[in-house]
Length: 352
Image (cartoon, rainbow, N blue to C red; front, side, top):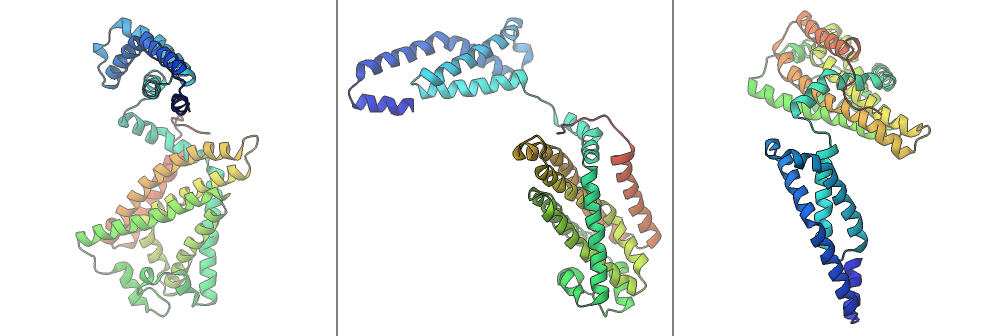
């Protein structure tokens, strides 16, 4: 606005006032630019990690120089006609603020805080929402089983054709058995399969989380729909006398994958529930605060999905014995439960 006024007044011929304003602006800059340049030099050394090249006097002067620059910025916003000076000060004050007050940590220290307590604490904090998601997943499995057992035509409505393949009503027990104990693919094929599974499972988890903004209802419905597929598959294999073998085949990766989807759904429901019942906060504040905690959970969900993709694409295909599959799946489930709910750690990351 100051620049626009400048040009309007200059066009109108008000040059004496403009010359005076320009003079004041130049004087303002010249009187203070020495301190600004000193602050900029100190900040540049801090940003480059050259602490040894900063004198004690400069370190002691840093807070005062920052306050002077911030004060100059406030004055410049009201009086100066020099847009370049204003932009320079805004950038300088932001850089200096970060060096003085910003939280800085290395990737290694962040990972230690995350895996050493931040992630598990965030998961425990949304336990009520995880229980809601668990109820939805169990209900979805039962719905899928009951629908298909009442009318097998529901199977094709619940299970995509490319997912089911030979696994369909009417298939013989030998055919179904071959799909969980068949010839193994080469390592290249397994790598591609693992990448496909990781992408698919990630989409489900992200959707379950992202849909939580609508007060959590779409997240619950998605979990029910997704688990109805599992219920239909359980009904199919159980009818062929292969229920135990199918559960073992699924457990290798499923205890990790379904746990990840469970946490993603719980994170989405957590955000939605806080938006629906914000208490004394505004809806936006409730969404922001719960979203911070949910974001920590979702970061860990991505890690779990990567582990699940490896187990599903490699380990499950290479282990062909039902007891061994149960052992792997059970060990993974025990690990996640112990990590989240048994091995209590000191909170290390933000919460609302």
